[in-house]
Length: 426
Image (cartoon, rainbow, N blue to C red):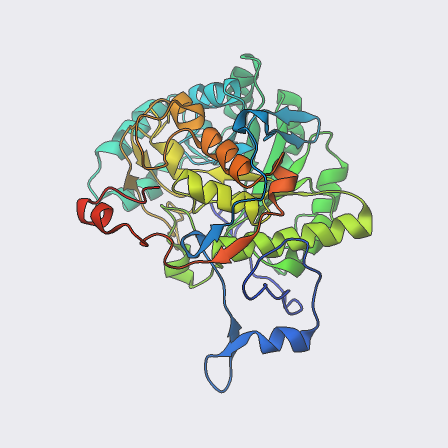
């Protein structure tokens, strides 16, 4: 496979059996259980294969605490290396979301934007014209158009230009690169002023086999940089543990849950986000006990409303990465359009362009006040309120919140709302 391929696929070695999820209550502190116990909680798919149950956001709910706290008195800040962020929310490195303008506003509001170094912002001096072309393309034309547009090579001079433009505004910035280019770009992005390097692929592992190119060493990459490194994506306990051993500061959780991603349909690969987050969070707890160092767990994708964000944190996340909700911000680069990072892959596209429309300023989406009641605005306020009603003083405390399996939670008592297509309700 040539190094110049836009989005690199990763084969991964066999790993030991995953940690069992709790049958009815989920806790990131639950110790690893023996294989016999795991076997008892799996279900027979056929004579050859057994499987354990996995859970998504719509299948679980949070249990209120015995004490409630004023939402204004809870702490939802995040520490990432030397950075302290007022909001534990990252904007995904997608071309329909993050450009210089969006990154600056995201930083001013207390979050962190991730700029895609393999995207349009680093391929074109004037990406706005290209974004307009994508916006105007028909559904039958858009994937071929994206493949053509992304054949333009990345220019290192534009990488530096975009980073410096954001940093001149006095806000933090993270940048994302495919693994094949991480080592060669690391020094450039650090010297340009980026605050964090995200190495991102469909699936990343600490061990990778290839006869056509050299494997990226996360250990060498982390040791050679003064800025934190985040790696992803990952959904499995043992794989996460191995990645944490390399020195990374954070790990992205999620394979295929994004609104514009079709990986699960194309490859059949993925784990629902609540289970994936809980498993990787369990690896973090194991690593903290063994090494005394905490690696951030960042749930990446699949969150549509504030309730999903809260559930991600309760399942064990330290932060979340969001794409589609932010693609609807007035400041978003895609003009009301959103597409996944693997959409323009020249060999096997795994994404599609979706129309999300421009719904609200980024400020309202992040911090309110909300003008709609569907949970897509004031995400920070929703998270604070969730901590308050669950009696959690901070995010670490919130990770101990009891969760129940509740597949009827979306529909119970909501007949009128369903009839009117209003949404989830209260």
